[in-house]
Amino acid sequence: MDWYFEKKTRLDKNFSLEKYDVYVLTSYSKGSAWEERERQLKNKKSQSLSALELYGRGKRVCADGKIWLGIRMFKQASKILESVGEDVEFFEGQIKDTNELRTLLKNEIQKTMELLKGFTLSVKVSGLENGALAFNSSFMGALSPFGYVLQKENPSLEIVGEIYLMKGGLVLSNRVYTAEGNVSVQKKGDGKTIASAHVNAKGFHRELNQSALNALEEAGKSAAEALKDQLILHEQQFLEEALP
Figure 1 (spheres, one colour):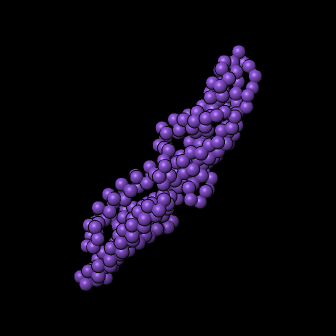
Figure 2 (tube, one colour):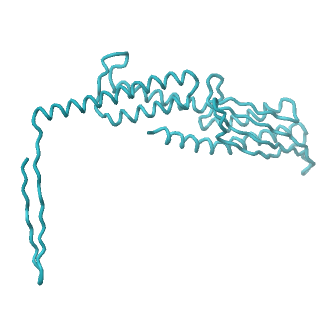
Figure 3 (cartoon, one colour):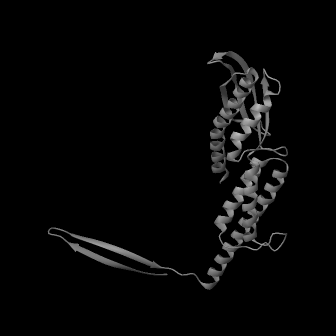
C-alpha cells in the first residue's frame, strides 16, 4: 500500500490556513482478486437460485387459487434479479438462465395481475323479481372498463351485497322508485373486506316496473363507481407492499 499527501496553504492578513489532501493507493494480489470474483459469482448464483425458487412457489400457490400470495413471490423474484444484474446460468432444470427467468416472471406478473381483477358477483335484490339482473348488468358494465371482470374459475374477489327497492310517489307524472343498500368487495380466501359502498339511487318512469328497473340500473352504476376508486387504491398499495 502506498500513500502520499498534498499540502495547500492560504495566507490571510493575520493567519494562514493549511489544508492536507491524503491519497491512499491499494491493490489486490491476483489471487485475492480471483477469490473476490469467485465470491461475487457464488453470491449471484445463490440469489438467482432464490429467485428461481420463488418463481416455482409462486406458480404453485397461484394454481391453488392464492393469487395475492403468488404475485408477491413473483415481484420479490423480479426484485432479486434486478440486484443480480448479469445473466447467470442454472445448468439444471427447464429454465436456462436468469434472462429466461426474467421473461417468464414478466409474463406471470401480467397474467396474475389480470387474475387479481377477477370476481364473483352475488347481490340480492328485494322488491322486484329478476331485479338482480338489472343491477348486475349495470354494475359489470360500469366496472369492466377498469379491467375488473366476472370470472368463474379462481376469482380473487367476491362482490356481495343486498339492495332493497322502495316505491315512492309521482314526480311530473313519473313513478318513482328508490334502490338502497350496501355492496362490498372481499378477498377470496380470507374474506377480508377491501372496499364497500352504500347505494341510494332513484329511478323514474311512467310505468311502475320500468321505474324500478331504472333505479336498479342507477344503483349498479353508483356502486361500481364508488368501489372502483377503492379497488384501484388497494391494488396500488398491494403492489408497493409486494416489493421487498
